[in-house]
Figure 1 (tube, rainbow, N blue to C red):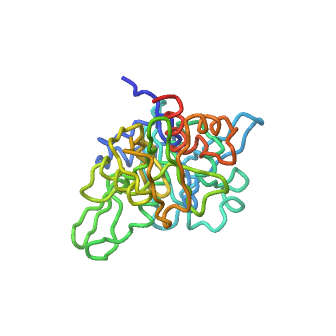
Figure 2 (figure 1 turned 180 degrees about the horizontal axis):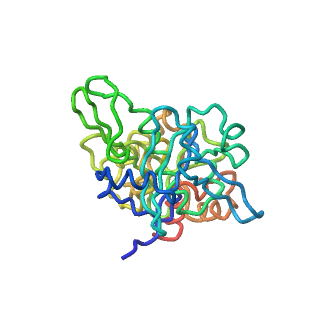
Figure 3 (figure 1 turned 90 degrees about the horizontal axis):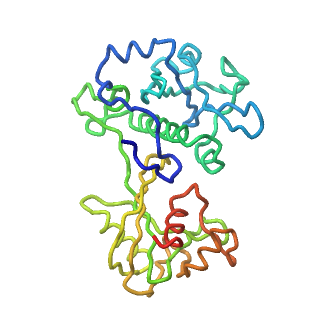
Amino acid sequence: MSLTPNPHVFANSPLDRAGHLRGDPAYLAEKMDDASSLFVPLWRQMPLILPEVTPGEGKDVGWMPKAQVLPLAGNEPLIVFLGINKRGKALFAIDISSAPDPENKGPLKGMGEFEDLRGLGMAEALPAGDMAIMAQAKAMIHWHVSHMFCATCGNKSTLAEAGYKRECASCKTEHFPRTDPVVIMLATYEDNAFLGRQRGFPKGMFSALAGFMEPGESIEEAVARELDEEAKIATKSVRYHSTQPWPFPASLMIGCVAEAESMEFELDGIELSGGRWFTRTELGAALAGEGDNFFVPPPFAIAHHLVKAFVEGW
């Protein structure tokens, strides 16, 4: 049975991640050399994106045969198995960051551009499934390049199980990809919702509050703690809304709606430089692009969908 589609960018991957095959060296070797297998090159954690064939059709991921991209990957190629697509083809991500200028030199010259995933998401430049696959690829490549040495003994570790583990030959410690959980919550009180501002926000933008979860903490506790720390808002109850994979570099945004005990608040002046309660009517106008001197994040962000859910009476 298929899951109900998730409303967020970077979710809804169409791949079979085939976790049961990651520990099968013979299968992986076969697929690595299979002419039908496809590889997406990432340069400095940006995937190769092909231009539109016809204006308005949208861009495509730059899937390539192994022979075309392997020469750009250096002496110790970093290759991660992503999964199997609906046509039965094995898909891989390959890091070519050692190549000096692959857009303009070598076998990929003139084919496309290496584009920032955040910009692609905001522009909705790729189909939802492709965005999810690229999020997986970026997060996995980032983990490998930032965790090449064993955290236990300091020696260099090596890739294992198709890229989903690193092993230290010296002390035998196994390391696994990390995902950092982040709670992002819309505090509500009757017909009002609280949004805040950080100093780096664009002028006029207000958003839901957010923060990293801490060890030994439940989602509900993290929501209540963050609201208290940032705005002195007392939480009565918490409802889960949805999650969004967030590959910047590798977080999971856990969207919640928190019922507040009152409309009292006090900004901390550190995380938040501004914030206030907005009525459902004000937020509805903001979603329609008619906000009075303020706006909320675009659909690219989970905060947008939390506000939308509140406006719609969720």
